[in-house]
Length: 195
Image (cartoon, rainbow, N blue to C red; front, side, top):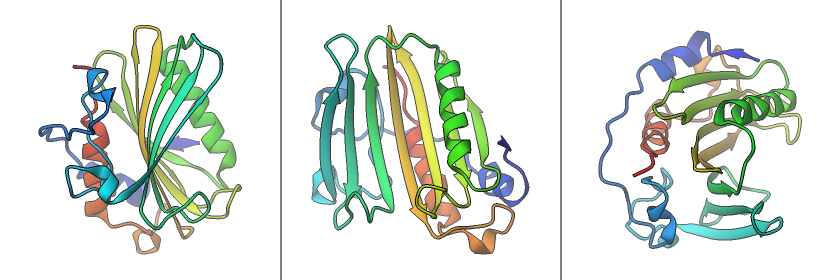
């Protein structure tokens, strides 16, 4: 797994962050973080355009809580975009170590070399964009935009993930996404911060 190179660098180089007012989700998440909802959402109520699912696992004090949005019409097997808000209670590792483990797992799933871009964030948070031209798991290409930070002992992850046809990271004509759409998604996930 290596740093972003070639055509992907050109895609990411044009992205800059311009925070605007956070969308309200109607949930208590706003008390934990300032964040924006999925890039496909065009209305104040994300449920007008999305399917929502919540799951909790693990014992009290060590549970993992996952909030997931998919665009309407997509399901667990056909999804092309997914937005996640995850809380890991009492996470023992630092953000940096947790993210390194995640990048290793993503790299092992990628046929060839996965590429990533690391945005330095304040206060121990991370923002990465991870690219894989073809996944071993499902044979599809993916892009993951991932913000991760710690609030006390709890680790929080906000991410938007995309799947599509396999692609060559050095040939932008093979990408399944549009540059402007990726730029917007990175700006939205990159807005995430603790109030």
